[in-house]
Amino acid sequence: MKANLYEGNGTFRVHDAEIKRPGPQEVRVQIAYCGICGTDLHIYDGGLDYRIKNLPQAVGHECSGVVAEVGSQVTAWKEGDRVVVRPLDYCGSCVACKAGHSHVCANLKFMGIESEGAFQNYWTVHERTLHRLPESLSLKHGALVEPLAVCCHAVSRGELKAGEYAVVIGGGPIGLLTALVARYRGARVLVSEVNPIRLAKVRDMGFEAIDPRETEIVDYVYQQTGGDGADIVFEVSGSQPGLDTMVSLPHPRGRIVLVASYPHPMQVFLRELFMKEVNLITTRVYEAKDFDDALEMMTKNTFDPEALISRIYPLDQVQQGMQLCASGAGDVVKVLIDCQDPQ
View 1 (cartoon, rainbow, N blue to C red):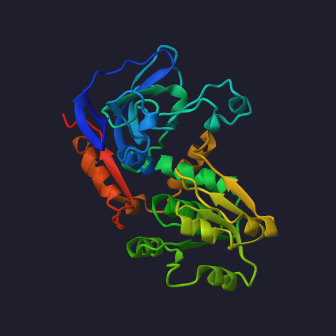
View 2: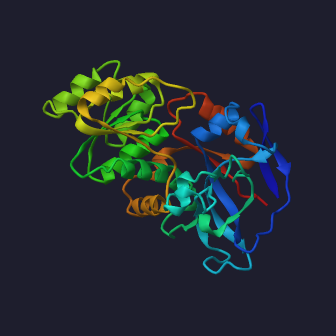
View 3: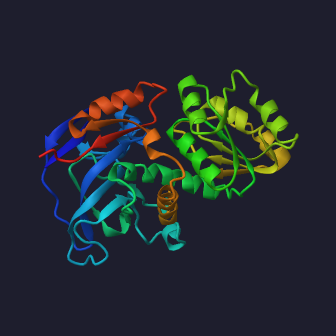
C-alpha cells in the first residue's frame, strides 16, 4: 500500500508501506478521505516534532473510511462498515480515565501525532475508536465529523443554552464550525473575523459577522444585548487581540470558552474576569458523545458540508495541501486528502 509520510523539515512524501494486520481488538480501515487541520499545520512547520518519535510517520486524523478487516475478538464491526475514527489512545487506568474523562487521559496518545495517522491507504486502529457513519452521509462529508466534534465539545463545555447571545472570535474552520453548532443549539451568534474572504464566507453561511477593525466589537455587543453583554464567548482565533477582546464581552457571571490552541505563553487581563466573576472554561478535543452529536447534527442537514470543502488533493499531494493551508489564503476552509488507492 501507499502512505504519505512526514519526514521532518516540512516535507511529506509518498512511501511504500506494509499493511498492518489487526490485532484481536483492532480494525483495519480503508481510508477514504482525511482532512488537513491546524494540528497538521503545526506538524508541517515543525512545532510538534518533539511529539513525533519515529520519523518518517503518517500523520492526519480527520478521516472517514470503510472497514477492510477485523481482529479475532471484534464483534461490533464487519467488513464493509462505513466509519469515522475518534483518534484518541487512552490508558483506561489513570485518574481521568477512571472518572470517565479519557479524552484528557494523563497518558493520552493522540493518533496521528504520537502514533501513526490516516494519510495512508489503510489505517489499523482499536475498535473502540470507531463510530458508524450513517448511509445518508458520504465518505467525503464524513471527514468533517472529527472537527465538528471538537466544536460540539466546546459548546457543551460552555453549557450553552437556547436563546443565549454567543460571540465567536475567529472565523476560520473551527470558528465557523463552532458558530454552526451554537446556532444549531439555539443561540444568537455573532462572529468576529478580520480576514475579508472568511468574513464573506461566514456571512454566506447566514451569520451576523463583523470586522473588529471596522466596528468596535465591545460597543457593538453591548448595543445588541441592551447593555448586558454576551452570555458566552468562544475564543477561537488563538491571537493576542482575541484574548484582549474576550475579557470585555461577557456580562457578570458570563462564560468564556478557550477553543483555540495556544502553543506559546499569552497574556490575559484577569482583573476583567475577576470583577465580573466570569467563568473561564478550557476545552480539549472531544468525548465519544461529541462524535455522536456531530453525526446527528450532520444527518439533520443543518448546514451544507460541501460549502466547507475548499479543495481535494490525492494522497501523493499532501505536501501541496499543507502548503495551501499554510499560505493563509482566506478562501480555504477545509482541504481534504483522497487516500483511496486509484487502482
